[in-house]
Amino acid sequence: MKKAERTGRQPIRVDEKRATKTVMELLAVPGVSCEERDIGNKIVEILTRHGLPKRAASFDNAHKKSPAGGNVGNLIVKLPGTINGPRRMLLAHMDTVPICRGARPVRRGNVIRSARKDTGVGADNRSGVGAIVVAAIEILTRKLPHPPLTLLFTVQEEIGLVGARYVDVRRLGSPKLAFNFDGGAPQYVEIGATGGCHMEIDVRGIPAHAGGHPDRGVSAAMIAALAMADLRQNGWFGLIAKNGIRGTSNIGTIHGGQATNVVMDRLHLTGECRSYSAALRRRIATAYRKAFEKAARKLVSADGERGSVVFECTTKYEAFKLPKRSACVNEVVRVLHDLGIRPSLDCSNGGLDANSLAQHGIQVATLGAGSLDAHTANEKLLLDQFIGGCRVALGLAMGL
Image (cartoon, rainbow, N blue to C red; front, side, top):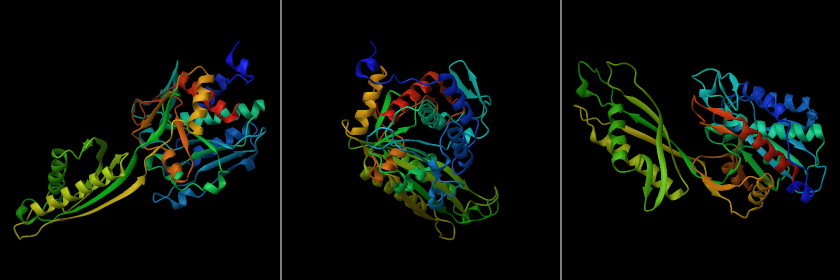
């Protein structure tokens, strides 16, 4: 006798053909960060097509608080419960990274990828969105019992967990259990994630004619080069380990210069630093600031002038770690066991919407739904893992 029959619970199953069709439909809709309106509307369209009352879905104004702007806020769907129990929230981010722009999803056996070799398919995070949508469709069409539910589809996760940071918490219905779908195989459960800071570095040099009088200039590029070499040499770039505490740092964008015959007078760099330790993140940022200021002092023009540096560092999200026996972790473990899946609890070195929601006082466990090789042109969705994620989502939504 199956465990679901022994315990009196309904077997957790989904219509795999419909689930595959649904995720293909979602993958076909573009939605890079700040451009999520179309995918948000598509989610509403699919759910209403399967019986969701239109009044159950609404968008908040998170994008109006975002420094990046955007064309829509978070999508919030609320379903009244048919059985008693605390409200549960399932969430996933709607946005994809820029490399997924123009993707055309195609299925080959167990794998969905982009037909274009230069784009990712958007499995990060249409897999998570798809798992929640499929679970909702099963509940709506089969009239399955469930406690009160909130489905949250966030915006701008990829640029700093922005949607979750500015979500209108009052509209979530005070969920007591929350589950985020964002990642690979469903058995890997993230119960913590690192904190991250964003760095902006404006290097100001002295312009001069690069052919006639280069000695009268100070190159902003050279200031940056000396600073980066210093950081690399002293262990502050890339993987960082200081006194047994680990972190990372990176420079992600560099923009500057006007012409090849002008000594570069301006260079703007953006970067990040991450660590579970807020103290180490502060030390990394301080090391960057000092390295750039030191480099600016080293270079002097023939006229005795030096460049300068303006450095800013802001916290994008704080680290968090859930107790292994927290309610949401216990519930994920229970559902996985019911499905015959052995859970693996770990912490992430990347930011999750769970980071921002932790700042709102909401504990969130994160698990995957089949995304692989995210943020690359080789990205793919593994259908067997996606179906597994759909079954987990349904089990968590029903709470049976």
